[in-house]
Image (cartoon, rainbow, N blue to C red):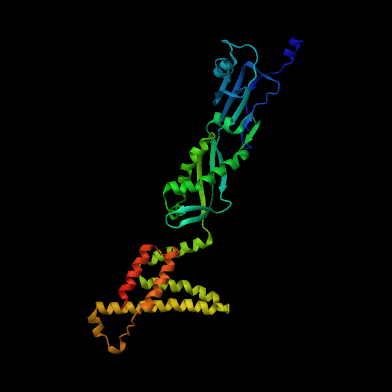
Length: 351
């Protein structure tokens, strides 16, 4: 009876895996009750790795190539099985194939805005998204840490874990880079490089090699974007107080126009616009006075009737202007240096 059972047994003489391109990362060769024939053929194709596991312990690992399975080609398994020199009978061992080809266009993104610390803006809430590609770098580690004894382990099974690692390390990546947020937002390649440097060792802990990661978009909350736009506009104006007030007036005009048909909002908008114009007139008068003092010959040659009257800037006007400048500094539109320069300019014009 034992002889008949032996004859009925099915022996495996060819071990291979033909990938279907469905995103499978790990696949266990179907053994059932079959045993591997001594001298069987093992075929490992390019972008594959085969791992023999004996009683839960990883034994031999094979890269691309064709192998005849003997004690010479299975040294670790031979040692674990305590075979002497050669084995003649069939043997059982789990065989796992791993795909090492690059898994491309994997998406990542921030479902909700995340908060990061920035040396220019303090706490900043941002959204970002992009893609990345990876491959299995250490099949043995991936088997012991992730895929285990499952028959099939796919990219979809790993997707949530990898995206979580990306989101978890965004803040650390920006902090470790030391690059201001504005520079990261303007240079997404630099952002991606900082993120990759943070993620490579984290992916390696589970046997995954990060090939590339891209940042396709970085966006700010609407209120912060408005402040950023104003700061960019002020950067174009510089320390010219006349241009500064012109810029403020120009910013107020659209709001005034929007409120023109709104009834109760007209008065408030008009007051805001009038305040901007009045401040512009005060500064223009101060500028005229300064030019006259610097060029007395030109002032003396001008007809008396045509000489503009010079208004004296009262302390109240100066305080009003300084308060508005202080508000702009608080909102981040003006830097401390810009505020100090404009404050000094105002105090010089005070008579």
